[in-house]
Length: 354
Image (cartoon, rainbow, N blue to C red; front, top):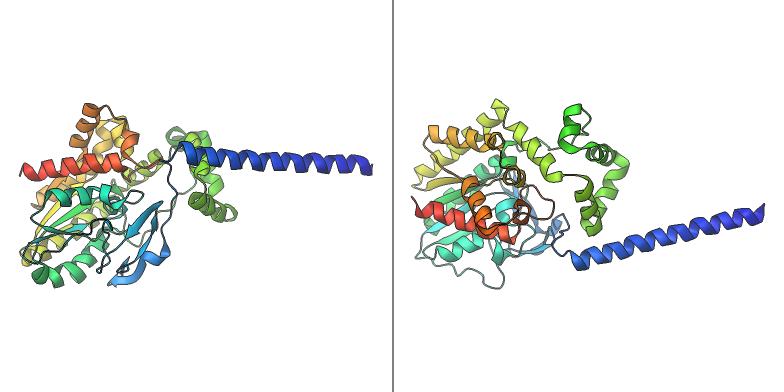
């Protein structure tokens, strides 16, 4: 009896060791063969609480990691390329960038972000990128009130470019929680395995494990992509939020307020709407509802707005690039270095056509 128990324990131990070795080897192979897979998460050392009123920002002269890429900030706490930090010229006018993690360029070196690429082409301006991960339109308002207006004369700020991501439709105090999907409609959207994953990772006991894996395992991200279309899930969450009139009214009224206080300081406000991966992948007109609603509402109050979808889509077809290559691995909105290059081209084209 004891002999049988010992054999069973030995078999279980060997099986466990083999399983661990399998996952270690698989993790190593993913890291070696798929360098495009990013970790997620951002260094807490970068963050400075209540920098712009209630909005947090980045600490000045700091460094950290965001989605696997190094982040360096200047004396004002704005992301810069450490290899070629911008030489601030007090004789030149300035442009301020408002945005979230998309325009910040998480997961991509600073020199390859569209803000940096635009800055190189617009040599007649100083450009300040105030973007911060997790920002919403209410945060843009706070940045304008606490930084742009007070510094407008000294920095000769003449333009503000607001890069609208579809996630901006959510109120700042609304936590975007992935609720477990269980309806028949959810099954169609995400697939049965995707629904099961959503249910499983929503339980408290697995949240810490999920966070650990997201920060430390690239194999986790590969398996997640195989079984779950995260890009599709996040898109429909933000798509559905644009069907809520209250959400739209909040966005439009906030941007209108930003435009008004900027106009009072003789500063032009221009909005750019950045498309999601799922929209570019599927190429269906009905999926463009968020852009159409926001651009139409802004047009009604005479705020200049450029929807980048059409230009980016044309660039994809011209260069024969699949939509997924424009974004980080299995990501719904954050651009890859290719995505930043094409976005920069489209932004510059829009500005030149004015």
